[in-house]
Length: 141
Image (tube, rainbow, N blue to C red; front, side, top):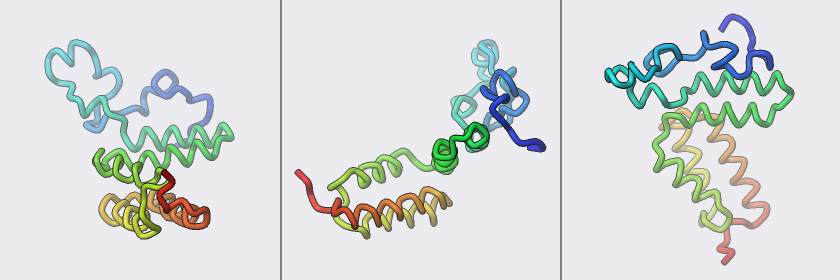
């Protein structure tokens, strides 16, 4: 991207369709009912891309919403993480589900080492510290 995205670029599909691409490089104009009927549009073309989420983060930051921007950035790291891994980590993050800090640190290590999700790993590590401080590792019910 040559210029920074701002709030005037939102929504990208309407204001900057030239920036929107599928994982296979298709443009929004390529995603038609005819193309779908012809079999030239695959499910992969309809999934969000890490780049689209990073673009949304840039717009959120320009709008003065840094927390939303960080959420989009972390989400961009999760696009290629298998759903069962995401759901397993989600379950661990529910208070009283992880047996101890090591469970969350193992999840963070998996995200970092296997899926290159550095920001998400840091988020899980921070959660492990907070859960330990607040006593959220013990079974609560």
